[in-house]
Image (tube, rainbow, N blue to C red):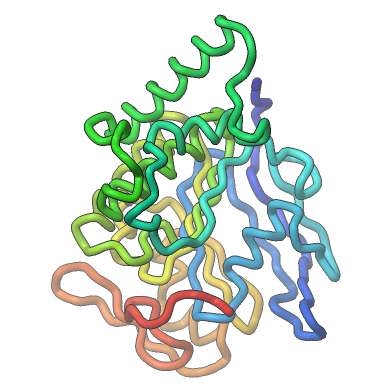
Amino acid sequence: MSKQPHPDAIVSRGAAVRLGGRVVWEHLDVTIGAGDFVALLGPNGAGKSTFVNAALGLVPLSAGTLTVLGAAPGERNGDIGYLPQRRSFDAGLRVRGVDVVRLGLDGDKWGLPWPGRTRQAETHRRVDEVINLVGAGAYADRPVGEVSGGEQQRILIAQALVRRPALLLLDEPLDSLDLPNQASVAALVSRICEGEGVTVVMVAHDVNPILPYLNHVMYLGRGGAVCGPPTAVITSETLTRLFDTPIEVLHASDGRLVVVGQPEPPAYHVDRHEH
């Protein structure tokens, strides 16, 4: 599927979402440029996953505008690779990693391969290409339930990439991974962003594993959102203004950031899932 270039991947102006009578976020004015690697941060309940769902057209706006790849949300989902929140595959699942990746191409046909030898050959080539891109060749033929959490994430990222998307929406892909795997997956996503020219929006609870690779940070809070370079957004002054409460950003000797005060610090690994 051919992709038409757009100067910006996601643009919102005065956007708001209301669910069950509660305002999740409002006054959202953000611009995510094409080819950027953006971390979407904020405390639990700030609406990070809601923003992803709004970009996919799954949640309607209650005010304002939102465009994704130059169109209304949902209209260009064929050009979006999406990795939802997850825990892990059941250890007894016998589906192979390569089959999980292939579902990204033909899953809308109930797992049946495209007809015709030429199309099947194209499918095999593209699946092999993305499996190699994410470095999953050594275990892609094994049942996905038998490989590690980090290896499963690589398989799922390959699935999200298989249709050559212009935009990747990754909802907490580092969740439940140990620190080495977090760093490895973050570096992989960065290489994909640069090498494939894909815009990446990654929902994250802890910015530190991905901080070296980011172009921009979007921080959701009670006062809307702030989007910009990490050094401009993750500061005591900016977060204090966003949350209208004293926030202090500390810089550890190893380069990691620690956010102290309310809201819940993004560097602390507590329950990361929004309910």
